[in-house]
Every structure is written in C-alpha cells, then in structure tokens.
Length: 77
Image (cartoon, rainbow, N blue to C red):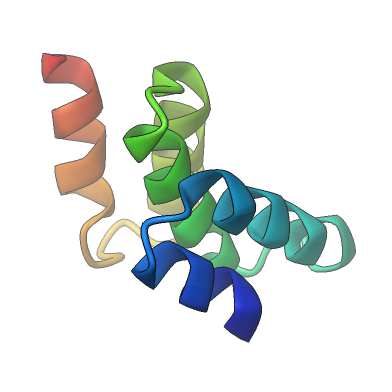
C-alpha cells in the first residue's frame, strides 16, 4: 500500500494502479486502496474503472472524502 501511494505521489499512475489492485485482491473492501485505484484510473483516462471505484466508495460510505468529487469529474469529462 505504501509503495502504491509513493507511485501515486510520483505521478506514476500505472504502477500505482497495479499496486492498489494487488492490495484490493487481498482486501477487496479497503477504502484507501479503492480510492487510490479510482484516482489512478482517473488520471490514466480509464473513466469506467474510475467511476466504478468512486461508486463503490460511495456505496460503502456516502461521506467518503473526495469520492463524490471524483465521480463528478469522471461524469463531466
């Protein structure tokens, strides 16, 4: 998870997405990994994957920070 976050911060979104997906394989309901994967997908232009991640976050926790904003951004573009 820490490596995925470091990749994300370095704007290496493909590597970050891969790392977050590995975490989600073991912990499918991890909110931080879901968020990281959704934002990585968004920055890679994978709108459907990003939207699915943001929707999952909102279904688990409607108040999850930045999930609604992310879904709105995906819908706009």
